[in-house]
Image (cartoon, rainbow, N blue to C red; front, side):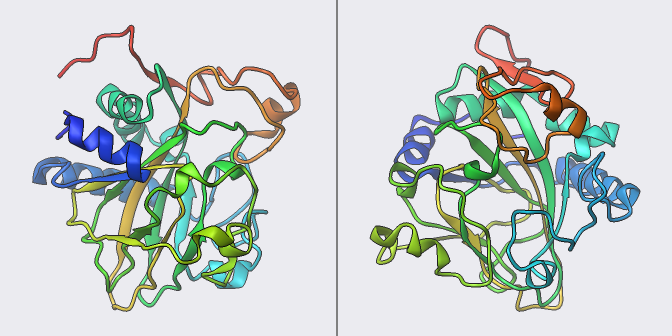
Length: 277
């Protein structure tokens, strides 16, 4: 794993709100990730989130048009909670350290992982933000996106609006059918230049949860698979948004409580803890 960041990569992330790391996983590790994610997805049998009776393609309170969104991608969350092999990958301290270095956080907790599988001829993913859907509000929140297949302009690679993380806020905007819907809230970004992020399988990107991003339609007869994980800087508190929290845990929380439940959001890195190579 290419886990050592350069100063230029950190600066690029902080300036633009995203960074692409080519050849993040060597071939052997990429095969391991592919096999782990494939096995974990098959075990789920379409269940989107552990402990919730929601299947891929069903309305989840995030997307305003579930029929349309069902053909954007298959989305399965918190595979680390139901598959030990994925758990080992997601709890890797080296990735946690990368997230901390890029975001500026001292400690990093998993918020949720998710497999994102764009099927052949899948719909585009509209411009959106991540953090406003989550149960905490932190401008440093960050995600990794690992390409398990080549992500190309033709099959649905990511696009970003560079620097948008410095402008956006925590307004919750549903991810809908219209690509330009986000500009109703952020009209100042409508004329922004965009950056495509095609990646070879095994490469990855990190992006800020307040960076505007989206993805092309899949205009091919092949799959575009990615494994992602969202990270919460340690010390964050509950903002009242349920998101993916299990009902029993959710009902035990009140706004302002610290989100430090290691069973739900494990701490995978802290600056005070040495990281093995």
